[in-house]
Length: 300
Ligand SMILES: NC(=O)c1ccc[n+]([C@@H]2O[C@H](COP(=O)([O-])OP(=O)(O)OC[C@H]3O[C@@H](n4cnc5c(N)ncnc54)[C@H](OP(=O)(O)O)[C@@H]3O)[C@@H](O)[C@H]2O)c1
Image (cartoon, rainbow, N blue to C red):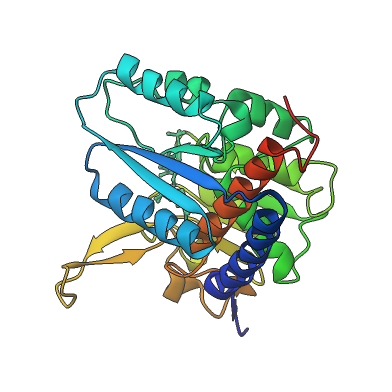
């Protein structure tokens, strides 16, 4: 079987171009540009890259993007104060706290502190609660990107068995909520697997659509997938590669070469879910700005 490569990069460019047009319209109507503030604590190398990429993408879409880089040793109280400052600043429309945070900080408490109307990462319990009821406003960017990729690739998840490997609060769980809703582009039968799942291959082999989001390089191999399945690889893992100047390369959670030819479609790493995640973050930031200026009526 010839496998179609789902080109997240070009899909993301289309989304970003549309966001840019909408930003221009918003600016001409209200003389305001969306303002995204990304908080990063410490110097986790992948996070530095992700934050930089988000900032560049936001600027290219005509948004203001501020990177607030805080020291690793910042206290939880100080970090919450910083978030509160941004919450009450009318010039700030979107707030994102880059995860993971250092161990001494309670991530849940930090997320709770973000104004749900500025929570462009869609992780606040109010936004997750709305998502669980099918009344979502800000959907976490990665799950939103996965759903959009499927739909834009002509893959309708309705009635399909979607098996999600990984149950994190930012990917696996919200994706399960999103795809199991009684909404357009959803209505899937969802199974969520995790590290305590017994005989995970028994589940992955049943998937019409398999989403890998566990953070284990090349974990899913050919024997774990059904012939003709759709594979969405969320994982981003660095593995050593002496041939590269930087000494590493990025791979997904799926052994791409092993499943190619068996599956009907697959998203690559890099160039799959990653670019779509950034594009969805920009959509959410635009939405937050429209809320702030009264261009939309849904508010908490
Ligand atoms: N493309 C993007 O834009 C994007 C965005 C976010 C994340 N990511 C990538 O996606 C991956 C997952 O990220 P995350 O933040 O969701 O990760 P996470 O918070 O570390 O969660 C990993 C999940 O995978 C499960 N897991 C770990 N080992 C497993 C195994 N051997 N078998 C089955 N399940 C296993 C864990 O189970 P337990 O719950 O039982 O511990 C957990 O639910 C990472 O590679 C990350 O870099 C990519």
